[in-house]
Image (cartoon, rainbow, N blue to C red; front, top):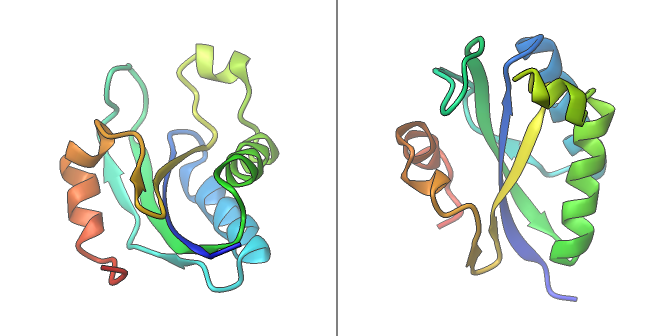
Length: 125
């Protein structure tokens, strides 16, 4: 299988620095050449909660989109993400796949100011 460029959006609004450190380690343990942008504090969008701590992660992967999705959803669970927590607007860790090869996903997220700002740090393109 050909490798695909991947960009992941990482965000948490609970135990933010600890959760970000944990997910970064999980990502590096899975893909040793994973790179990260500078973390950024942002206001919550569409919910009332504490500030979010966000960054982008990027690398090339061999996995299919389905395999990649399953791996990142498992990482969310390891970080304590559950439906019950989300129902309380407590996002232990949210990992969105923004780019998989030539496919842009979560297209609305691409328009967010902080995403555009963080994209400027990525030298994939």
